[in-house]
Length: 285
Ligand SMILES: [Zn+2]
Image (cartoon, rainbow, N blue to C red; front, side):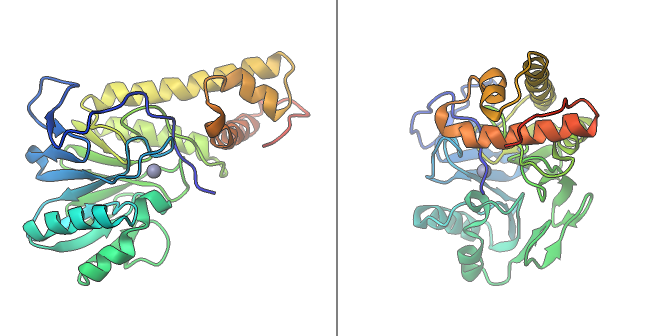
């Protein structure tokens, strides 16, 4: 099962490159399909796979040059592969590909991209990779950070004061958590650990660049705790079925995102059970 994220809250116009509308800083420009971060010698190329789960599309990040490094090749769309290939050729080729996690919207273009750049090595936390990464592993200019929650294998990458957060932190909305033992507690730890890095910018797997990481991370923690509070209130009110708990604590989730909300509910119930706070007779998703 592939999990996704909250729906897009706003539509960007399809400008090739527009000045960032979210801040006055000239650090970067945000367009529908290119995000320029010259200060980090990084560009984000957005794939044309918009959906409720992928927001405006998946962001592939290209870091450095001579040769360059890729975070998340994205979906295997011809237009996306062409855009990546053009940019990588301008930057003197591809040294390595780092995956934040192995969901198809982030990893599908890995094989076709490696066909085009056979010398590139592949790194991730799991799967058939050349370099298996864990907390603190270095891969070219990137340092891996374990950020489980959305998926058990999830990594973020730090390059200078930029963080590439995949689906751990999105440009808009919140992420869904995959039920896995201890997933939600581990996710909250990961958010705290990202916060301790005092990063200047977050480059997410979907949505716009985040210029105020500390505020965004605080918001993410507050959001999870608010969901938990709503769930605890629903349980106190005697609700025990999945439908009742979702109605009470995820009333804002549209029908299309209900299965993903149910998965996140499972992760929240696991956390309450681990903490001895789950009453008897609760239906599990
Ligand atoms: Zn994704």
